[in-house]
Length: 325
Picture (tube, rainbow, N blue to C red):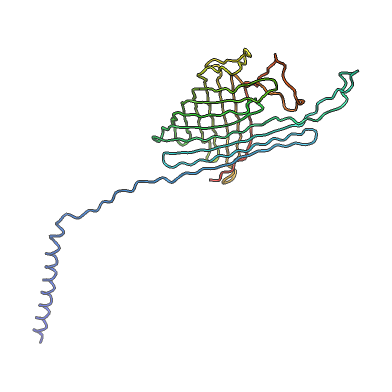
């Protein structure tokens, strides 16, 4: 019995070794073959559509001895999808003051004031809308098209607007600076506030445009932006009144316009920021100055007298900015 059990164990071991040898002989040729490789194309990175939207506003009001009301609102929105970017913005500013004008009611004493007359005078009355489309050919190069419309009645312009087209170059971009430079063409049409007894024709201006702007990151919560835009008229403006000669006709490069902007913005809360801004506008040949607000009905300038708006306008503002997106 003992020999039979040993024999059976030997047969079992021999059978198992035979199966193992067969398995190895079958598996060995397969291992010698080239291992199949499966390659999948890397999916192209798709950038998400980028939306931005914000609104800002400010107000100042006084009553009593000094009666003034001033307010401004603005909004902007943009959408970028790949190499296409569309931006829209608009702004409105209005202000008025109540002033006291003397009344001389005694003909025998022409310098004696007999009463005071309250008059409401507009001090600010302007609005603007602007749309811009950028087509990015590369990360740093783009073409742009702009359409805009605006008015500033205090400066004598009941309407001015037009379009722009040109080339935009991202000159520098790092963790601190974003520097842009642009060259292009600008077309503008200007209509002036009407005056009794005078015909003020609309003026069309063809200009070369140059722009430089920089955004500086001071801290993670604070930034400074600065820009300068210059427009140089290329055509002779036959219908524009020359500020120097008081006659129609302004030669090329004699109606240069410059806009400089400087702003400091700091984040107060997650979506709320405060902005301190300064804007300077220069117009080499400004519009004819309209009859002042609050003047008696029917008032007009003498035929030989025509004042003009100032060549330089400045705006200093402090506003709260709320970012939606």
